Image 1: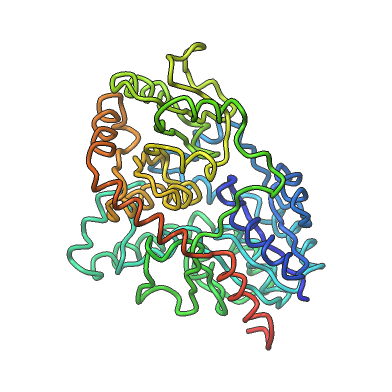
Image 2: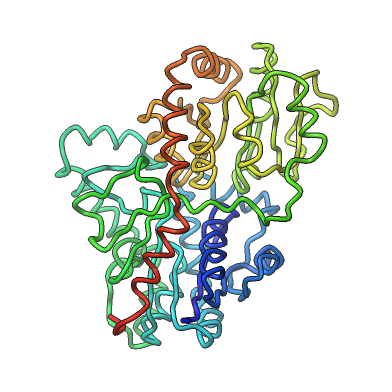
Length: 422
């Protein structure tokens, strides 16, 4: 069996799709290694997958760094500059890991892995975690720095093509270090490494549901939309903590609030504002707060609970509604749960993911700077009081549950594992 190296960078939402796909391929007899930040070693090895340390390291407990990269206007640029500032170290680590691999599967911003695959002439496939990465002029995304630009979609693809072309040229400044290393390695130019240069010429796996986005004329023709590859934890995970189970059993379904595994480090007053909103409504709520106190009082009112972490697949189906940041992984789990949602995007792809589920009729969206107790209450009253949201969310849940992202993605990979390297 070919030995497969996955590369990933970011939060748990960036890691989990590759864990899910790695487990599926492992069960089919493949040797799978995941190369990523050292902090994820124990999680990966607990699933009997091989681990390779690839810089840069990332700590989700570094609140200063999280706040820095979640600036709506400059956050994506800051992440890209951070990754490319250590491109030589990433290349060195990836090159070492690739010595034991026949195939490399890349995350959208593991730029060094693309260089290694091209330098070693290894078989290489790429992945996309959210539709925004295609930057389609025919289905224009909502961009965090300028959400209003998406309104130009009414004029057709022409204006968006021009705007995106300018953006592509500007973004080359952020990743100049990649071009410099590429030239030193004697690798031929292959386009903007953020956009067309990140796509494998053989296979691009779009690891999200078809109801979130359909293929467009300007997507790579070798794209396969797989559905979400969900990772729900090891089979021997204990499931809900007893305290959480008692809470859910003690009354009506609560509203669940979560900011995933990264935005939770830049929450500000999100949880305090949310507490005020649910108190005004007199409803039950569960706050998933991460490892931080989040400015909540030590003693919470009856019917309201704060808990550091719980698997979204365990708590979302038990919710009346879900309030979340719109990360790709969280959005996928919320869609599968069949529950209406309020999306409060902080940055990056979250604005676009939120708009897409809003267009499905399953969500409301309130941008983070506008989120306060009054707006949260108004949105939640609409979500829980208007049955059209529940009907739309249930239909979304049925469609997402019927997909099998792991199997579709693994089948597509295996179909490409023979024949000459392009």
